[in-house]
View 1 (cartoon, rainbow, N blue to C red):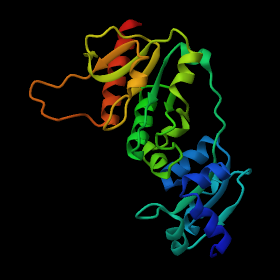
View 2 (view 1 turned 90 degrees about the vertical axis):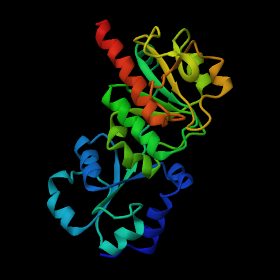
View 3 (view 1 turned 180 degrees about the vertical axis):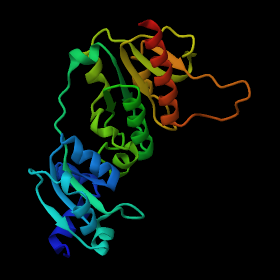
Length: 257
């Protein structure tokens, strides 16, 4: 069937942040991520818009409680898709209401991303957190939104397992007194020889500006990733830096227990 003009207008509006915030919904695209969302069953699915072949092949995933299941044409899928090559199915999913658990956070590691603007970086950092079992990733208000379709796509399903929300750094510090605050800065001590911890918040800064002075002043531990002897790169990608830092912390945790 063809989508109505109202359906097209609504689905295309979810390409924009202001309408995702207005409706409290977001888009998930692609067969792999859609199957993962439906199999997990932890998020409310408002609608499935898919090619007839996908609906027929995935009948076992189409449980009760889904708002609507709409069979659409390839032409309509191209109209509502954000992918260069639309991939059979698009879900409209309700944004979850995530509640902060300060007690749990105080006993483990969390990431704080300050002004991360690139959707691919945020999605990859969510995958890094998922890989190392870090349950909380916080974003400053000026960071890219976690429900940006490119973040969802690049997270490869990690958004289902990692709690990610926007919050001011000062709010976390106020509610987690005494928690170690690690920050990646150019003049910090090498992370490979620093005194690490099995609990704390690790701050990853903006792709080009790093961590702001206001946040740096609150850090309890200034750490850096030293370049190799033959290294010539000016800087590391934020997601790459996050991966290295999380790996070192993970190695520390494994040796401590």
